[in-house]
Image 1 (tube, rainbow, N blue to C red):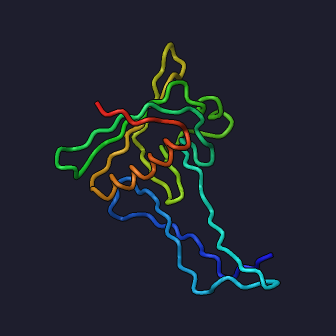
Image 2 (tube, helix red, strand yellow):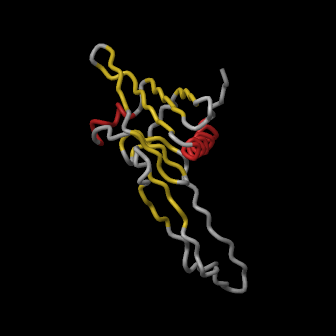
Length: 161
């Protein structure tokens, strides 16, 4: 058995420069090394967050979206358009609450947008389109790290057109 003292804590903060107020998480470095117990060497615990998408905080979206990416010629900005056909949020929204935004969550934190539109057919919800805009190369890189994790978890493939 190992006893860990000073396990790093997660510190959430909002980016003042982001129009979307996405949250990122940073790990505070621990200055205390793991304690030995029964002369066995301890190894650090790494907590991974499964990448997920939510429209209602705390309720994971089960439907895998079609994602389209555009990027400016100079590479400084871009946009991702997510299209969900018959998203599972429609099944649970009456029980859980209203759609509050578009949240992409992974081990680095939360990327979010409020640019979310529902599509209705014959008065019934049929789909959702969500847009996420990246205004800097840093935001683009962060989004691509999320998409790599999300696509690996959900079997998505990147096709360049």
